[in-house]
Amino acid sequence: MLLTIISAITVGYLYAGKSWCNYFCPFSPVQAVFTGPKGLLGSQANQKPQPSITQSMCRRIEPNGEEKSACVACKLPCIDIDAEKTYWEELNKLGRKFVQYGYVGLLIGFFGYFYLYAGNWKYYFSGIWSRDDSWEALGKPSFYFFTQDHYLPKWLAVPLVLAICTGLSYLIRSKLEKVYKADQKR
Image (cartoon, rainbow, N blue to C red; front, side, top):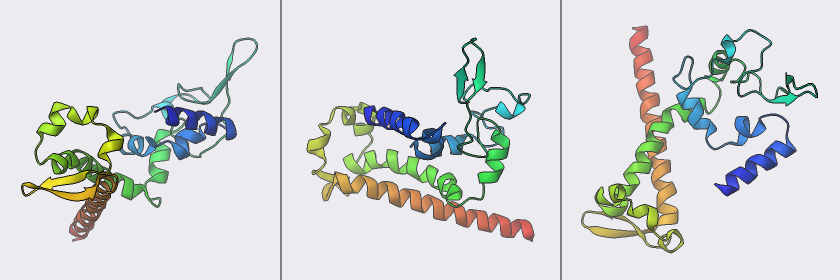
């Protein structure tokens, strides 16, 4: 977490505006998944009369205490200024479908790995995993199924499970989309 904070400060210092949020932040794809048009967590900044300063816009304080926009247009369209426009313009960009369709698989892989690691759900629900010596555990066997350990170091097994689940989710959901589109054409 400390590395993330230092990275955000560094990127904010080196680049203008909200470059960290728009291009580097590892949580940005999650926000993209959950904030579609009229999304539960979406910004309503596009509903405000222009030119207004919304809650998450870059700003500066004038000597007289008045807030002014410090927007440097680091990304157009900007989700903070016009969430609806941002959604529709980025919807068909390369990688957006992968983020949308792969996210479900990422979640399944994350939680499913706990089962693959221990062979049951007790490991996850007990919270033991939060007290494991993570450096020592990186080289231990990392799969347990069919009543035995299977050796693959954890440092390799975790990304492998996440990548496979994310990829499968993307492929399955892309195929479902094609089937749906073909059905709609008929």
